[in-house]
Amino acid sequence: MSCNPASPAKRFAALVLCGVAAACSSPPADIVRETRTDTAPLTSRFPAIGTPVGATWVTWNNADPRVPGPTTYRIDAVITLQPQTARALADLTNPAQVPPPEVAPEIRVEVSDGPFATGPALNDALSTPGWAATGYLDSARNQLVVNATGD
Image: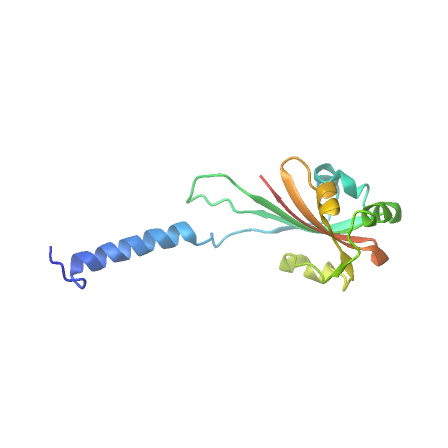
C-alpha cells in the first residue's frame, strides 16, 4: 500500500468512513410528526394546565432504527386554557414580555402574536418527572404554548 493520499486504497477507506459518519449523524428521513387535538395526553403529562378548552399539538421522537440508544420525545403544544388556569399560571411568569415561541411548523399558525410571558416558575410548574417543559403564556388570549422534551 502506498503512502500516496490519492491511492485507491486510501480513497476507498475515506469513502467508507464518510459513509459511516453520514449514516450515524444524519437524521432519519422518515421522522413522522403526529398532529393531535386530544387533551388527555397533555393533562396527564402537564397537570398544571388543568382542563383545557382545547389544544393543537405535535409529537415526535428521535428514534432511529439504524442507531441503538435512548429515545427522546418532543411535544410542541398550543393550548387554550380555562381563564382561571391562565390567571394562576400568569402569577408564575416574569413581567418581561417575550416574542412568540418557536413550535413545529405544523402548528405554527395556531400561535397568537402575543405578547407572551415566561419564567422559571412557570417552567417548573409545567415540568413533571420525565418531562422538561418551557411555557409561554399569552394571558389576554388564555393561550399557553409548551415546548417539552421527555424520555
